[in-house]
Amino acid sequence: MTVAGTGAQLTLRAAATGMALGAVLSLCNIYSGLRIGWGFNMSITAALVAYVGWQAAHRAVGSRPFGMLENNISQMCASAAASISSAGLVAAIPALALVTGKTLPWHALALWTFSVSAVGVAVAIGLRQSMVGDPTLPFPSGIATAETLREIYAHGREAAQRVWALAIATALAAAVKLVAAVLEIPALALPGRFALSPQSALAARGVTSVSLKNLTFALDPSLLLIGVGALVGFRGTVSLLLGALVAWGLLAPMAIDRGWATLPEHASAAHSWFSAIVPWLLWPGVAMMLTGSLTSFALGLAPMWKRARARRRNAGAAEGQPLLVLDDVPRGWFVRATIAAGLLSVVLQSLFFGVPVWAAIIGVLVTCVLAIVAGRVTAETGVPPIGAMGKVTQLLFGGLTPGDAAANLMAANVTGGAASQCGDLLQDLKTGALLGASPRRQILAQGLGIVAGALAGSAGYMLLIPHPREQLLTETWPAPAVLAWKAVAELLLRGVHGMPPGTLVAAIAGGVLGIALAVLEKTLPERLRAFVPSPSSAGLAFVMPAGDSVLMFIGGAAALLAERRAPRWSSRFVVVLAAGVIAGESLAGVAVTIWGLLLR
Image (cartoon, rainbow, N blue to C red; front, side, top):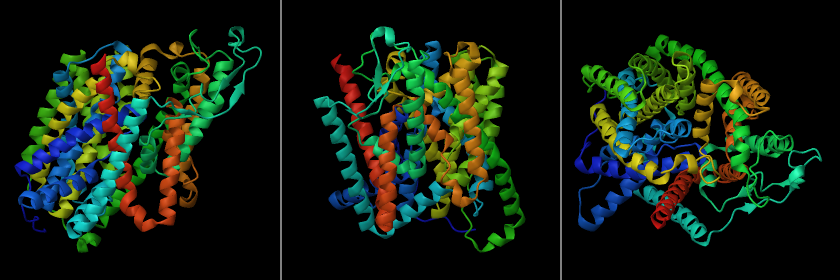
């Protein structure tokens, strides 16, 4: 057993820095989550900012240097706070408001999101020994964060260069957003039109064609989506572009021509028709995302457990690998945390949403099981399967509590949010284990982080989206994750008879395609998998404006070009620049939104 790292760890300034950074970064994830359906791991961003901030304070006023283990605690606290968006703020909570009209006051929303995250933390405590202590599990995000911390403390100049890149990208993206908002710069519409047939449903209104602008092929003056594309990668963004071309370039004109997508009387030929078309396109898109993610998840389970058994059989082969500090968390923590978090979740489900106690108990038990699976998936891939976990619970509660949208959405909210928080905590525990940090102090930091995230994130969500039914599912706030959760809940609530005309066949086709792509992705030889579109990304393009997919493709292509032309520079700066762009535009977007609300 290695000796724990030396130096201060859970200090007051480390906790305060992490909570403050996490509160700010939680707003970034909520903003981007409501725009594009994605949130991001903010560990490396938080570590860089904390390092340079305290280095500057040390030089300016002679404060004690901010040690690497202090930074690890701070980064972990910030990461936990930033990931509060996955506790329902960009999916289940707004979906519930759209389906039932129910909203929560700030204090109740903060308590709810805290309870969701607490279930994930409790499960992660139980998985810590078996997963974090396994030196053969990849833990991509956790190991990358540990390497980054070692690098910036070994080479201070490297940290300074990365933070300068982060600051420049943040300032540039914020400036672009603010200028575009102040000058009201419109989106750049791509040229082109689609002719409609003489028998079109719009012929009687004198509409003979639709423009690419009507079909959302317009590029916003935004750097956020380019930054997101750089992080998503080339394969994911190509899948988005292909999905957008099929959805908005092929299916949308057909749906308009045949009258399946109903345009309101006041729809102007000079504007986007996103809000009118997306209620039709969401069905094949959501079906593709749902079947693709569930199939991929199911196909990945058998190899995952096979690798786990192989690791246990070959445990002796890992003797030469460094052991990790794992023995400083009392065993009773897991039991007490699980009971407390489970009881809190059951009480709040019943109190806030009227979920029957028996159903809430079943939901928490299912959540614990699925969070274990999600933790292993995250350890292997670095990506928590939030969508797949949530949809499993939605489908389960469609049978347990038929006709109860609140039970369906909020039980699934617990599962998806807990799975995300469990996966994030395991990644951060891996970081600390590699650096010699105390697991007990890391878990306490995680608790402080979810408190800060719940308080700040809930306030940020309510400031950004005070009127969900008027604001969401528009071109300004496409909220694709909300749309997916809402669609599944309504399908289970109303059945296929509530679907718009033509969507049942489209949904079946999308579902079959999602299964086929997932199977190909898992079974083809390694050299061919890169050419298979991602069903999750392609399906996502159906429920967000086509221009967003185009911009994200540009970001993915730029990142690929940088990787090919300048691999060393790319490995050092692409992620940092992308994170800065996302943070800059998100924070500026939050400021613009709040300013607009104050002027009303």
